[in-house]
Image (cartoon, rainbow, N blue to C red):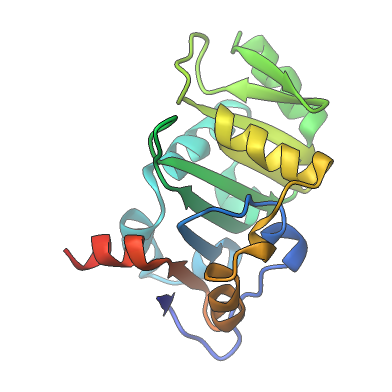
Length: 200
């Protein structure tokens, strides 16, 4: 199921390199052109309805580190990884914009937050004492920030550094992403499981 939630003449287009960061087996994938969407009066209401609660945590996280997400985040992509016998459903996101990782990381260290090292990157926890499924923040570079549960971020980093299968190899969702990409400021695609959940 492909949903172009807000069709426009010139919708935002998500770079394939960003899509390729996500692991193969996601069940839902969505995109928001944050810079353009924030210019519309309808955006705050739609933001509450469509963007995951984990993104609102991410926004709070950024603010605590001295980053205004309303001005720094330009594009947002996020995915839901279905639950299995090892973990509940997880949310994984990539925010593109203008970041200053060194300054931000210094601010996060001053807050005394827990950290993890994975694949040469530092993950900052949302709080000083964490559970396995709390949200983490990681900068891939000065224009790309990743957020989500630590296990989900580790899978993304393994795609990036070890060549694990990415979302580009998902024969169900990737064709739908190509269909929706560029067709709206905000769009989403879902596999059959998530589509059924949305219809209940």
